[in-house]
Amino acid sequence: MSITVTPTNFTLGKVEINQSTNSFFTVSTPNNVTGVSISANDSHITLREGQTGAFSSSISMDLDNEEKDVNVACLPTSATLTTGSITVTYNSSTVATVSYTFTVFESLANYSSVYAKSIYARDGIFSANTVKIGTSSISMTEKGDKLNFSGASGITYNIGKATQIDDGRVNPLTSITVEKSDESILIKNNNQNSVKIDSDGSVRVDNNVIICSDVLNETDNDWKLEKLGSTTMALYKKVSGSWEQRIVFD
Image 1 (cartoon, rainbow, N blue to C red):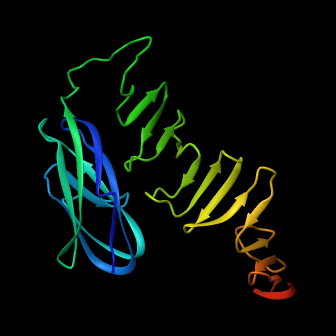
Image 2: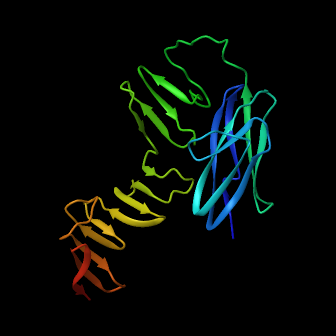
């Protein structure tokens, strides 16, 4: 039995005193385990499993051959706070210690708005979670790895990465990637490269192709071309709810 924690150290960057900021790490296992305990060792840190629910100083997590996110909320109350840790235990044994660092700056409550024609900075222009642009805004997700764009209409769009849409894990299991080197599109499903669309529009698959009238539902009279072995292919037709083999290609 093995439990993997990723990453085991991270930085929260610059945090305003008495203002919460968020990050996350993942816990995964190829086994079925219950009662993984995760505890914050510092009073300014609270934890939550996944993206919904309340934060608390400690949580208990069950995993069944899967990877789960642990959201971390940091609310520093002193400018002297700079480090901390989180302990992951199972069966009373420490699986991992997650360490984090950050710096705290004073409250901005007493500072007024700044108007300028141009702003130049060495370490970036904005460090806030949300940047307002006219009647719209761009904000960082709590996990800290994707951007949300909120238009004037109130509808929010997830921007994601510049060249990849993925499931948000540290090591994505499912993703759609634009390969700039050869102008192709690579689709990974369950950590396997399963579909590639070349620049000329040709599609490669590593298992089977189903041609159907409705891509969301398999129905009678759909066709499937499936790889049976290294040198054999078979053509199937859906009849009365079952796939019937029609032709085998050697």
